[in-house]
Image 1 (tube, rainbow, N blue to C red):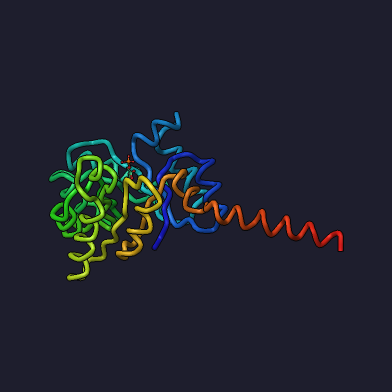
Image 2: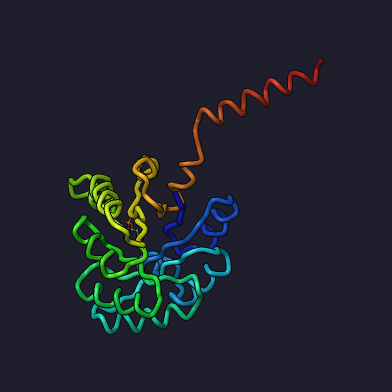
Length: 215
Ligand code: E4P
């Protein structure tokens, strides 16, 4: 499974990149707003750090506006893909960008039916939001599994990005069902790397090693 980080924070991206496990980055308008810099500056900075797909989201709500924003953002760097919200205008813009050879990440996917339409329109990535489905009493991972089953039946070039991840278990569950990519917040990546038994084990090994100094 490819691992993306879901943030626009440069320090966090640098830190996770230094682990040697980072394949790409997703941003969204809320994440960009937290950084106090404009979208183009942030994604250009990210592209200097990570050599992999970087999602930059448009804010237009009509297909023409989405397409124009997408074309402009795609010029920043060859690794930029255009994040479009799932809606009919978004589908039209996805097809238009696909025809220009530009990758789209169709976001805000909450059902298998939406995912099927996004794949049909030519989205390179589709992002089902697991945590936000869980929040309203659905099982987000079941929707992701259904999407994976549908894609397996056909020959789409679409990869699923497990998005809106809220805890480490979401990541391992997504990997178990073969999801192509998980976009993971910084804090959850840190939690994934940690285990109290590992800390306990390191401490015990070091304590025992200290004892050998008196031999
Ligand atoms: C996906 O690309 C989105 O940026 C993100 O995963 C949304 O997550 P949230 O529901 O925690 O805001």
